[in-house]
Amino acid sequence: MMLETVGFFVLGLVLLALGGDSVVKGASGMARHFGFSPLLAGLVLVAFGTSVPELAVNLRAVAQGLPDLAMGNAVGSNIVNFGLTLGAAAVAAPLLVRWRALSLLLASVVAGTVLVTVLAWDGVLGRVDGALLVVAFLGIVAWVFARSQDESPAVRAELEAYTLTGDDLALNLIRFALAIVLLYFGSRFVVGSAPELGRGLGLLPMMTGLLPVAIGTALPEVAAAIAAARRHQGDMVAGHVIGASLFNLLLVLGGLALWNPMVVPGQFLRIELPAAAVLALMLVPMMRGDMQVSRREGVILLVAFAAWVGFELLMLR
Image (cartoon, rainbow, N blue to C red; front, side, top):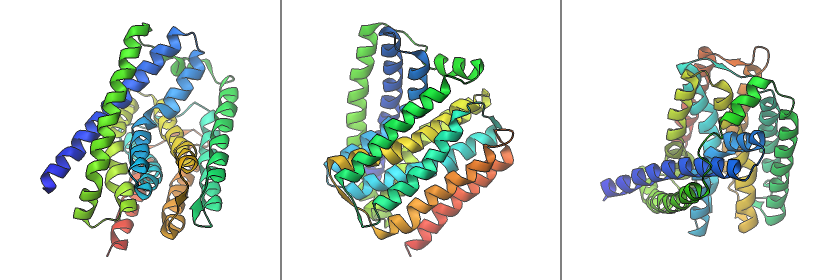
């Protein structure tokens, strides 16, 4: 039975990865077809496009009455992004980051973590709280886009190149339709098998979201980040990681709270949110000065991630 559960979980992860890729390609093509700003389209897709699989999983989890799993996945994904994804990419090849607006996004991730903690301190993330988080996210996106107008030509060209794909309308509608099918079944398989997988591992729903679901949905991003690092695309790697973290923290948690107010466990406020903030803060000195995340710093991030996983597992005993 457990083997079947693991099989469906892995199949769901594969479908989610394929669906997320199809969404990004379809959105890129549609943006080009309708003449949207290549810079704006590239910025949005680089920073937030890779979070679509996590969003699909979280929506499915809440719809099936598993808000703790969704909450754990949203914040767990941030810890995985900073520790595992960015750390592994930097170990593969040092990351030169020229996109100056990312410093603003990183500061926003830290501030957003504090904001979520304050709003949820009463034990509930309500609809008003959710609305504040969503509005904050939209305001930050507009602010970063305005600042990105002044980026170097090399950074602007790299962002705009991210949207280079076929702009045929029919092709991109097919991509979107395919993405919907893949994300639907992928999230269904992952969320359907996650509770049983968690029980088999001795995990509560929130811990299941924090560990196997968050790590599993991030693995395709880890592979993509390592490949991008070896192509010397440090801006893309850092943009994916920081943007996805902001997306999960403000838009996903805020949107879920708008849909259905969520009870926030005390452990989430005392351990998980501070852990996410600490990993984001560790990146601040790395993003200053030479704006390069070295191999040594990548190892530090990986060690911090491993320490967090170890701590969470020890807490289960």
